Image (cartoon, rainbow, N blue to C red):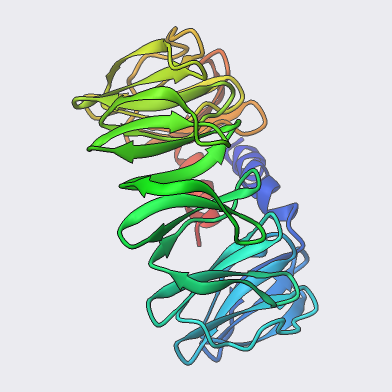
Length: 296
């Protein structure tokens, strides 16, 4: 029975990984390359570090410099950047000598390395910082929202959180204020709701800025599949979009839901629960072993 549970859990944990074409792997020479889902070598182990593929490209590092390869292992850029992020909407954020800009999937620099800080593109816009203030540019590098904010996050569901005078609010793609600047922290929208922090506690607001779930949790995640993970007094649980508890806040650790199930930990053992809070696979050491193997 333990063997059956182990195999079932390991299969569930590998679902997301198996969907990707290539995976980073450290070779016996201490270098990194990529293998396919069957374990066959796809890119020889020759890099000092490698990240997973995103948008058809992977970030690799050699001799302290970063660049990008495609799935055939061809380097689309020289390995010349001090920092590099994965592609998002066909653009990748790169840094050199303390300045940031963007390249396209051909490796061409579209936005010059001129910004002090920046975030990746989302919904056609990217937050960038110049002369101590944040604003937003489009994929052509054109300024779309004025540089006047102390901090800025990316767009999600048509809105981006920005900070002004120490408080967070949200603006739309034209820069119009939609959510007043009254929160101490905030994260992006997901499924119509966004986490916001007031004082030391977190809750959720809707896209009009109205409180949807009171700020009463120590931490919260975004909503996925209709549920959000929350913590109170060091314990984890889940709520739905009305704020109703789907599970008691009793777990020592909890993951996010995937394919209708979430991995949870209690008393040193792991198990899976479904979206109603019922055990889908009971807590056991077999589940714990499978989880630990999946992280190797």
